[in-house]
Image (cartoon, rainbow, N blue to C red; front, side):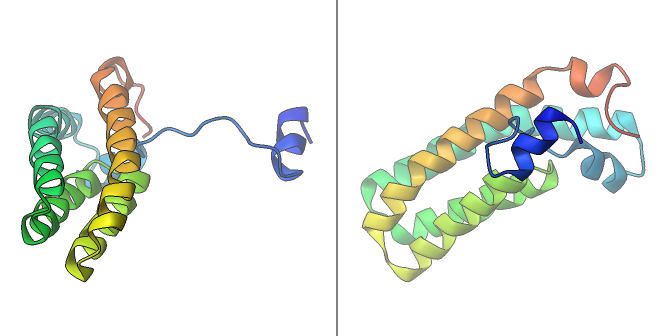
Length: 135
């Protein structure tokens, strides 16, 4: 067992994981890298606006709008294999549907941070355009 593997299994934090599972996304498009590139391009173009609209509804206390925006963001995040961010958006959707404004506002900052990680990761085109994505 390697030292880093021992540290991880001993309960110490392991190396940070990628915020996106490109292997799952690539499998979902039957290995077609052109479709993968298009999917990611559309996501990178649309996601910041989706996140801004969600943030606005949360700031206004618009629970119905926040639930709808969180649902839309959740779908987009799922399409690009952003599992942690997807789970966060699902939590926001649940909190909005439950009418928990305080919980929604508290959880939103974590989702914004996770989505920022996803955007940064996917903006590095070398990960998915140059043949380095998992096969």
